[in-house]
Image 1 (cartoon, rainbow, N blue to C red):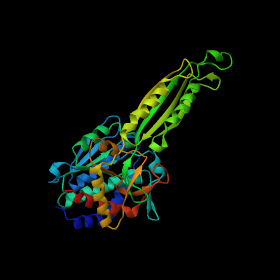
Image 2 (cartoon, rainbow, N blue to C red):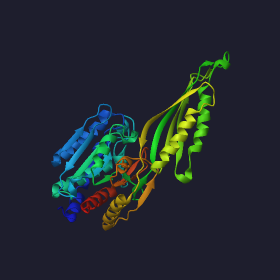
Image 3 (cartoon, one colour):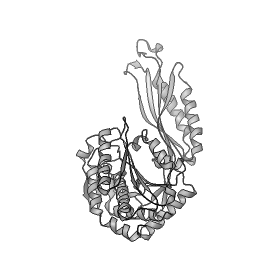
Image 4 (cartoon, rainbow, N blue to C red):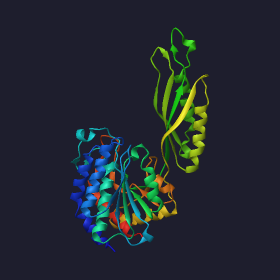
Length: 383
């Protein structure tokens, strides 16, 4: 079995190589809908694994980026793998890497996706390589690199769930919180579109013949705000509004984008029932509305097994002199899918960063090696 001190030394000696790989992949555009870019990042990691002698499987997808799974052998855990998970896609448009390439300033690295979550991918890759080079992990390791988390994982969710169902544990390398903590609970989210149709008419010469979809959508927006229950942790946000044909036409259509967040799985159906009732009720006679779910994340719920996984990770980080606690996040992640299939899951084990999804996104470079070492020790401690 790999000795913990050997793991720590191996990873510490490769800080420069980690940063070099991180620079390469940050400088590759990989927006969620940019299949070529997302796949280019996956191919760079596949090259890294091949150089380490680690086999890689590629699950191809026509519409979105492919999924990549690298495997490191391990004798224990009844051959149930430990999964190191992360996503390659970012929220940034094509050309962003050229406009804001990787740079280092005052101990921080900057660039699109540097923390969310290309640093976590680099960390996972090097941790897997450390175990492979030094004699194996206590159970097989699977490194899963997905392609579409930022848009709800429409292509990779089945791969995530399949991988997690047979797994012993999942460490999801979303960025560590700015506090240095990890995430032990997350909200679920449902992302929807409500479209209303009315009837167009000239707003001056034939006003009464028109049926305003905008007036109807306005009633729905006001009603939807009451779905929010802050005490219960349920929020509903109408974040997008569009509609109408011209200023002098009674609006024949209108559309809103809806973001629903909740904490516990049972809350979802109750909130969705209220949303559907509001969508189905027409205040403006003659309008018709449809609701479409565009994407969804499940909540990360910390059960007893996940709590034990966190305790082991916290102990590992503590042995390195880094105090770590668990935090709850209103944000969603793929860790909710792995938790929902019953796999013990810990999220935000990646290097520490902040201001994700913004031009100011940063990574604390000094956290890269300690977080890799802590993850490696946590894995080594699983029996």
